[in-house]
Image (tube, rainbow, N blue to C red; front, side):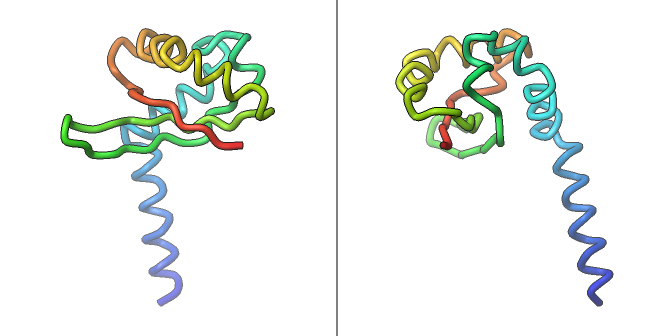
Length: 102
């Protein structure tokens, strides 16, 4: 029975990685320096994408890990710039918000 559960778990992981979310996240991670630019890439690291349903549709949040708390204000102030760069790279609204993790 344990093997069956492990098999299901692995299949679920593979499905998630092959989903659009997995593809977008993998591309963001692989090209983060090119997408965000050196100024932001030096102090941030993409760690997840989260989807939330809202009354207006859905929010797609990119979770960024920050190197230093001091960078938080600069990154928050530049959130719209980073989102614009990501969405320009993909050619569609791939990300709607940024969330931060220290």
